[in-house]
Image (tube, rainbow, N blue to C red):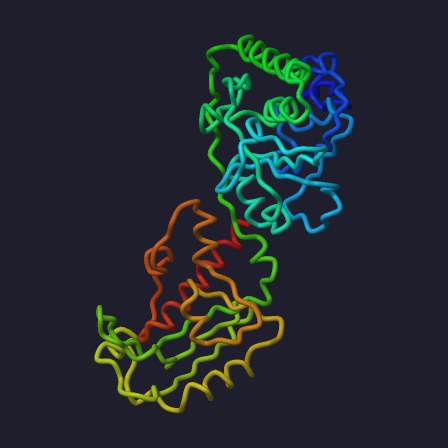
Length: 364
């Protein structure tokens, strides 16, 4: 039976590691606006919420897009390093300001600033931390970087000319870090890992649930060899073979390419040139007339459906096979059971697709 630890409603930490008793209340002339990336909101050891609990004049907003300048208030400045950023510890702005601080990993913060023109337009300030971070439970990418609450400690001390008063912001941080390290030390140092049971095959039930709509599809093309530096004619549709799996209804049609046949086309498709009559546009129109609006075309990969075009719905059986086996699969001929077909690669592949779907259905 799983038991859930009681959580503090204020700091949202388990009661055993609650840091609320160490939170100071620090009034400021500076208005602080913290913009928190959504992925940081649920981080149990984040410091943005901790800072907002210490600073009554602060506001904490969660999101990635900021289009309303009213959330910044009067005289906003952005605390974020970059070209043109002034050193806020050496050259603090005069007069009360709104300090806008982005909370998140450095990658997340970079994305937020990059994607918000309102933020990029703000006067930018940065600083080099005068002391090493006390945030010992989370690795920063550089020793000069500090947590959000430590950054506010340094910057508010400079803006309001009282660095000693704002050192109180370290008290809840220290309490949280010490509690976290204590919990880690109390955990067993050697855990016996239970062997993981093999996962059962993931039969694509969402595909098989539409059994009456499944149509296996194979398309062949007049394809010229691709050589580096030599322009090749585009692949042209010359055959469509399809079968409605539930009923066995079949469509087979041909078309002659508008240009010359590639020397390898008849060999690879196992067709006879005399079969290639008509044109691709008529072949596509006849096939779409045969299809029902609810049909789901099932093919091995994307090549065949792309040749045909205009399908109401399509499913990649190869991708489903990779999810089913939990590994990469190659050609249809190496995955499907062999079938006996007199002649024609398209018809042989069509039968193989049907066998794959029927095998999945049998064990679903």
